[in-house]
Image (tube, rainbow, N blue to C red):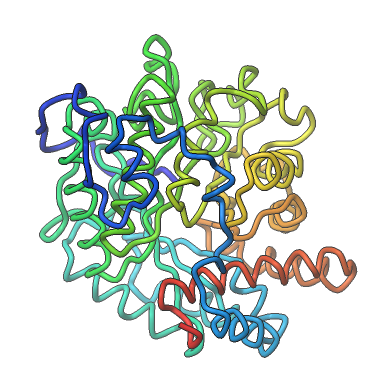
Length: 412
């Protein structure tokens, strides 16, 4: 999800420049290993990833873990599958625009799209309405792209007018990045939005910026170099948590070396550079080490990782690289599977089943009309294949554990 919501490159430009990026001490509230690394002068990507790639259950008590297991067991198959779909609510629609879809399929989340620019009070009224649609036992995850610059869904009174991520990374002092990000997270939380579909962990080289339509063209990358992007990504993840909002590292394994935008094109979306050992993965590892709640998959192609499947449908990329080599055990979410041109050649239902088969968890769709076919396909595959059913239930358990950790279930 990266619909451009304004024609600006960003608002405030503050800070003392990049030079003090490595001299911060204790700036990341509750940042643990990340804060210690920043204070020591080491780049955040030096965190041993395996030590921080914990599952959503890692911060739960034994009682909560048992409760989550019981909760999964108590849900109907339809209710379980519904937890794995997020549907988009466009700003141009009424707050009740996806009511029937959320209720009928017991969906686990809603994504605010199209630019909610009327301020915090309006957004809060919408999210309050949405929260009333959820199963009393399991609350909704309500998300938005609040990166800054051209990609900032929530605007108006009560929301900081953010500059682009590039300005944040290149112009802001570390303390400014921490305080501004924490403030943004608090604003989102007060407005009832509990997931930020950020930060962007993609790296784009300086010379390629104008040609990289999904990221560089809009200055969505924090820097030109992977190590500096890694530092900022880990800081943003920790600061989002300090403000009470879940963070999403995206778009794995990176959109910085393609020319086409997967939202709007099926061409120019092959990355012939990135491999399983690529340095471009460093920012993703840093975000995971900092405790990212979600990793969003790219819909592009990466032949050096998997020559036959797009990343979002690739077992080699999700189960092999992300969950295996890197060790991430958290929740994996798609980019848009409803309207994105890059996935239109794949049947709607197969977009959902192929993603789960590959090791993913949550399917995000900006098109409410695709929810029914996706649910039906998952249910059919689950009934037919015990191994697929096991993957579905494992995904549901991960999602409910994450929700429990964020105070959204009766197990919390």
